[in-house]
Length: 101
Image (cartoon, rainbow, N blue to C red; front, top):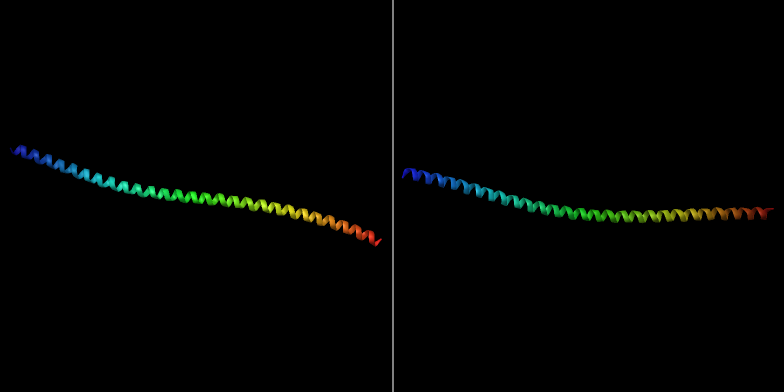
């Protein structure tokens, strides 16, 4: 009888140990799931921020290209005007030379 009581007590202690282990594992799993959910939210926020910054960068690059194109056009127009001005000055100089003779 004592042997059965002792064996029963040992089995109950083993069962309690397993229950405590199971409960601790459940708490650890719950905490891990909470941490995972937070990390997933952080990842989504970072992905959104990355996409926004990527779009901002593309927009800035397009704006830069547009500015460079306008600058190149302005430089060409200036060069053309300077060449026209030089040519007009030559013609004026020729006319003045002709008139003064």
